[in-house]
Amino acid sequence: MDYTTLLCETKEGQDSAQISMHSLYEVCCQVVDGRKARGKRYDVAGLLVVLVLAKLAGMTSVFGASEWITDQEELLREGLGLTWNRMPCANTYSYVLARLDSQAVNAHLAAWLVRKEAESRCGEEPSRLAAHPSDRHVHLAIDGKVLKGTGKQAYGGEKPQKHVLHVYEVQTGIVLHQCPIAVEHNEVSTLKPVLTEVLCKGRILTTDAAQSYHEFGRLVQRAGGDVILIVKDNTPATRADLELFFEDPEADRRTWQAFEQVEKGHGRLERRSILTSPDRGALSAPGLG
Image (cartoon, rainbow, N blue to C red; front, side):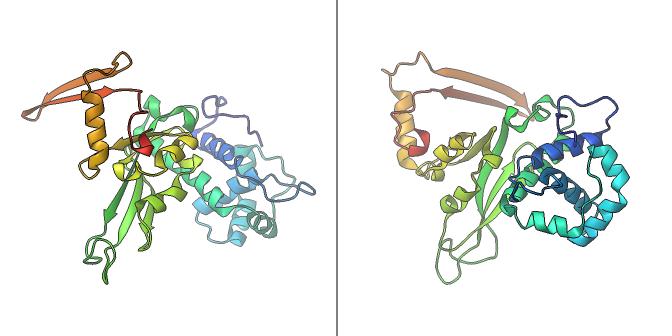
């Protein structure tokens, strides 16, 4: 397998399908192989790539995928640069898959599929076609919603409403995660397991201030992402702290920055302004400190 081909340095004569297969191989290289080193004939990344291609071709079982891969041997060897003496049997795929962390595999593949879908929607936009996902600054929004017609009480009670937590990419509208919120849980506890490096690295996550009183900001930054918290009237203490902080006439504003944008259209004039400060130590919300 020629795994040195990067998205930003593709070989001459490669079509988009070959480029996609190589980028998929790079993603699969990040999966930890659960097998022992002795007696390996096939690399785990190569096995995962051909299985994904078989799945995309409509195969619904390991045996069906094995047969399809064998039938497409010539095409796969040419497109992927396989150096295997022969294609694996169905038992080999089953043995390898049984020794992988399925959640980690799903997370890596989901991130790759979302990235390919985003690239197809956004065309040649430079911010979307960076060499590596960590080189982009993609905006992810996190929001909890109530499903209509599912109950009468917002929380608890005999007929509680069903809540779902959504994580979606703002620019493309693609939903990355849709997590039902169990009755005994809330948005905070439901979100924590989702904040992995695969989701957060190189991305900017926005949410409301409900997360600011917990570990949300620290977890995202530890996973390689950044955070923007939207503070509204439902968190009066945090909002009051922010207002006092920015209205302080004696504050040292040498490191502060301001920006204003004015737009006219559709019969109205819109003026947007922002004032920023890196001095966060005085704020009481843990997620902002």
